[in-house]
Amino acid sequence: MRRNVIAGVLLAAALPLAGCSDGAKKEPGSKKPPSSTASGPSSPSGTPLLMGRSAETVGSGGKGRLELTPTSVVYAKKAIVDTPDNGLFAVVTVKVRPTTAVAAGEAAPAGRGGWQWAAPDGQVVSTLDGQAGNVVLDGFRTGGDTQPGTVRWTARAFDISEAQRGGTLIYVDGEGTAYRWAVPARDAGPQVAEVAKKLAE
Image (cartoon, rainbow, N blue to C red; front, side, top):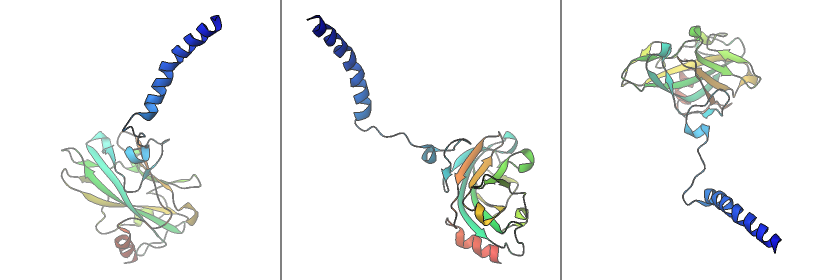
């Protein structure tokens, strides 16, 4: 008899806990929380965003805010007349849009910001390494502020080896926050044909 009473008390105490657990799992309309890949900017240790995803960043020197969207990547063994030191240029197009009423610029490598390429082998390459700084494409201007209410297209180049295809694109903004995107190992994105044509001119 005593055993039955104790068992009944224990069962009664466990039921509310089980009910809460089951309710959380079976609640109608509940959805799995979005992953960092789909919901916004990642931290340096988080899951990289996919190409085409936007991240809202702080402008150079902490001035204004910029929405940055890497959209395409093109790999080329030559850019007009320049050849890469390491065998390959990776050129990434980026859509830049201010999100405040203040003109804002991208952070620069000189200020420990800007764009970097983290290769699968762990090496990090900046836009200043090798011959990347010589890759300048008409219609994809880099540097300077972007005015409120406008959209600007830029192209960032990296001098890499064949083995370093398919890296992680990293941008460090005006507050030192890092954002990351996973880059395909082959040409991809809506600007591929346009960029490839300009690189061959």
